[in-house]
Amino acid sequence: MSTTTAPKMSPETAQLFDDYVIPNYGRYPLALERGEGSYVWDDQGNRYLDFFPGWGCNLLGHCPAPIVEAVQDQVAKLIHVPNTWHTEAQGQWAKLLSERSFGGQAFFCNSGAEANEAAIKLARLHSPNGRYKIITFTGGFHGRTFAAVTATAQPKYHEDIGPLLPGFSYAPFGDLEAVQAKIDDETAAILVEPIQGEGGIRLPPEGFLQGLRKLADDHDLLLIFDEVQAGCGRTGKWFAHQHFGVEPDIMTLAKSICGGIAGAAMLATKEVALSLRPGMHAATFGGNPIAARAGIAAIKMIEQDGLLERATLLGEAFRKRFAPLEELATITEIRICGLMIGIELSIDATPVVQQCMDRGLLVNCTQGNVIRLLPAMNLTDKELAAGCDILVQVLKDFTESKT
Figure 1 (cartoon, one colour):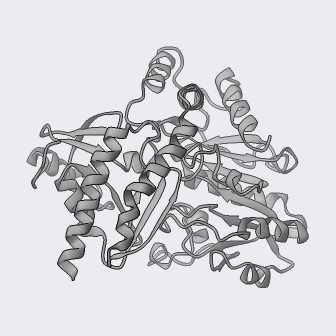
Figure 2 (tube, rainbow, N blue to C red):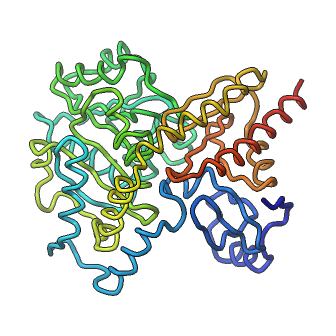
């Protein structure tokens, strides 16, 4: 694997971005040109092992053949039609998702934020007597649109954009008593990530999701699971809540749902789904033929290649590889569920990301001090070993430099 040093992109590309692209992202000086499996190449010919492919969207790796073939076939037949018409692929996609979850119905859109907007609107539409309040959790993340960002209980996402949408209140993640205290006669729903992604790969305490289900049932509330990051097989089950034996009334999905193609869905029980009446909500490109074919191909690839089982095995392999890190003074905690991996540090993790990139490995930092990995389900044993060797060495080097 090649070792790279800055600068890592052509000055021409850098100038294009300086001149024409709004700088609302913190971008690395890297221009990616192509990808295959768990590798990407930049425009200088350098290869990188990607442990954070597509911000979690590329759960099947870069350019998986079944997705590529499905999209290539579909794009030559029919690219887009509005949802005033039917397409067989959209119906089949909804059926496959329903059969693997809780038997509900699907509304299709294009991103996790859109799916959560739909869930919030549906919760208000379905709740009796004008109930509209929704309880969410500290450390959660639900998107950047206004309802979704208001639901996101992290102040850094609220800076300078107020006033926010009314009706949201925040409870500490894992604290059932705090949730109970926030329920009143105007509460409509509880919205939670079964496993927090942007919050640092935080798993729920034992009994927490079960407790939320009971609170929702006792107070006639809807329970909404945001599985935008955790869903679609990443944890070794189709959906993260299946690890805990709890079913939601509404679930949101995106990121890896289409194997890297833009797509998202909100699933709701049939009883709740009826409240999303014609004309109440829409998404122009939602469930378009290309996304639907990609979504179908992704589900079939996962099942035909045994990738749910593979995700579980890879998660355990990462756990074994990272076990020695727990002895390092800079490691606070290691959290793993399938292919959701968080390594919490007692120091700023940003330089760790840069050092890994300089050595040919792409990882992510979230919450300032958590190294987050969302690798592909078809990562090979050799790739896992190579990437872990780099990350472990970088973390050891940083620990030595701090002691």
